[in-house]
Length: 153
Image (cartoon, rainbow, N blue to C red):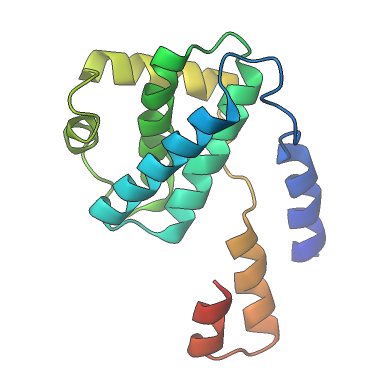
């Protein structure tokens, strides 16, 4: 039942493969942003789930915002990461720490405004299933040891 539920939710949250077509945000911009988000993830030592969730929020918001400008894209990235960290982490990184990683390109007011905009666009529905959720469940069912689970992750 759990897997059927997660699978149905996964379908609900799917972002179309060609969602960047005809947008101001090009695939190369997405690649650069995700490389940067990966660095932020490494510096803040957050969970992998936070990283995966942040990428999902960034992609979903980008898809839902056809008028998103390149100048706001890093703000979307840092804000998506911040929302994901607040959702997954016990102690999420402070927003000032994250803003420093943007070389202070944005201030707290801009980040909070983007957070409100993203949450509204996502309809506050933040609990989407990730591949790691399916893996965790499969590992439990298959009584997989920690080494194999970590390798699969």
